[in-house]
Length: 293
Image (cartoon, rainbow, N blue to C red):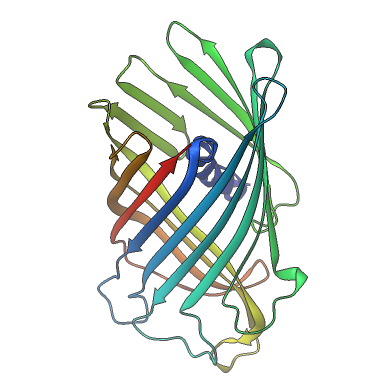
């Protein structure tokens, strides 16, 4: 049960920022890097990721209702200090995804944002079957609960076939804007504080999550043992500072940097762990650009 709650909290940390981003973003590109550790026992592993997104937004005839389509490609490169004994490439992975989103106002001040996101994440070393397809879905309901204190409540549920739970998981969060410059976003373990230094500059501190789950197009046998592996799971959690800087009215630069405090890298057979790497904590940096609608 604790593992399920942690997974739900991690997805909450990912969803609430990306939900607002998806509703405003037309194009986005990011580069992320997490550094190596110091030991030489196969645990000095670094990660880098390139992410490119393009969205199409459309207002429907009914006032307040919108749909959007997002097409996404991401590439992840893994640099092993000591390469695992596998007869294939486990250094380069790719994710191709499509998101369909829908937003509309509801009664009594509630607002609904929902999307469904099928994707394929793999090393693409051979042909990809239908069973490689991952599915992620979310429904989020938002409502101002105290207009004087600018409190907004977020409630909803998520579903993903990659987290080992065959049912929707509830999520919750609270956004507080005490004045025009400060914004506090809470949703364990997500936490960020934003300060609007000027009309073009926003700074703050936050927790960040960088997680991946990659399918292997062929089951592999690890270190000549009998246990095959069919997916690779990565999770990095940390904290740091961020800067959002507007370059023009619609173009902005985003930089997030800090240090990890939890890292996990596993070879798995289905949901069963075959082996894992005890990674040292290290520097995290993410930089990107965004073009808004």
